[in-house]
Length: 120
Image (cartoon, rainbow, N blue to C red; front, side, top):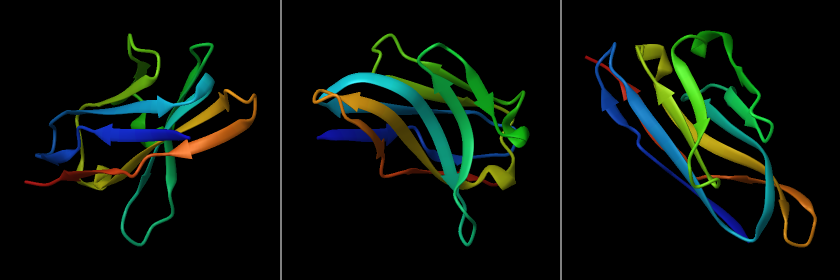
């Protein structure tokens, strides 16, 4: 089984920064795509950023120029650096990995979420 654990959320003032981390543990053969999603109360879950195993990144429009997704030196770790945060960034942030496990089965795994609150 694979588990993802996020960290780094918190309360920050508008214009501030946070770095979210997500680390995977368990039986992974390879990680194909690492993603960050967010879900605000009463809203649908939104894809924020993705990073493929080839290093390609994509961002939702509102995150472009402010957020950066990157992979850690430990290859099972992904970060989301968030700068110039705005109140509308307030959400529960989730990481998701699309992996091939050690039985060579494609699967996706989600973390439990970390709360980001942007308020003065």
